Image (cartoon, rainbow, N blue to C red; front, side, top):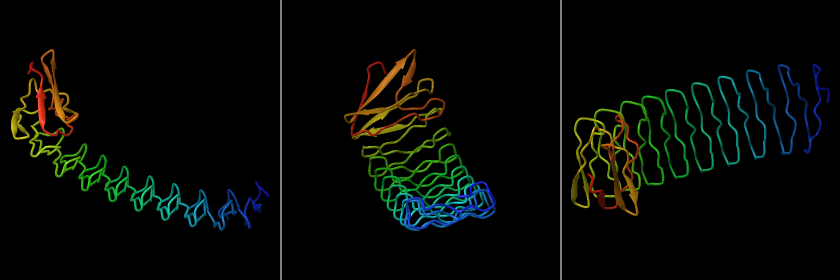
Length: 253
């Protein structure tokens, strides 16, 4: 190969035929590197073309440009996102069909992450979408936004609270019906566990967590007068896991 000159000729590296590459110039052609057929990529220029990298058909993105194209990376069909641009496209990452989000942009798209159908949230934006995380249907909250939506986390129907806002909504997490309090606000509401109503009052508006141990909810109560149970710290819910039926509170409550 004549590397470093205006025109270079590329060797046959492990393949049947190799073509010419002008590396560093306005047009480049691609060698057949270990695959059956490889096409041309203009790396660093305004348009990039296709290379067969380990799969039957692959498309090489224009990385750093306004549009990116498709790559088959380990799956039957994959789409490579325009990372850092206004729109992102689809990638099949480990599942039958997946959609890659526009991370950092105004809208995010769908990803199948471990389930049959999943929707990836718009993280850091105004609206978040749906994710099926280990359940049949789930809705992912708008984290950091004004409104949060519904998540079915381990139960038939669940509602996820507005975290960090003035009002929190209802969650049915492992029980028949449960009502989630206004966490960090002036009033706390009622949680129904196996038909037994338990009032969860806020002490100084600060509560740490409500964990599920073998189906038994264990409330860790306060040290220095701060309740560590179901509500939030400064309006932010830390955790509330599913309850199969029994709410156990320490006598110090």
